[in-house]
Length: 123
Image (cartoon, rainbow, N blue to C red):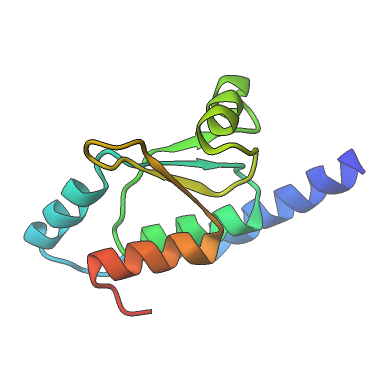
């Protein structure tokens, strides 16, 4: 099973690389607005997870920069994910809420919908 996952993971990463979307052209003002909104967010992922790839491709296409933490390769990140969000599931977007604890948003569709809605991006 490990070898199958390894091979499929490499295929997913190759296809992502080969068909990587180009970012849309936006103004510097829009880029600054997006970066300001996402500056305190972080996304936990597994590099070869197809759902994580989906979110990363959406982010690249729409000029969204959010630091990622690979919870498969780094056990500390995996522990952060479990202790903060309650489960080892990726992708997971951590959204800090001022004066409250962070929101841990799972599911690629939910992450994409949240970012699109908050940033005014049409899907």
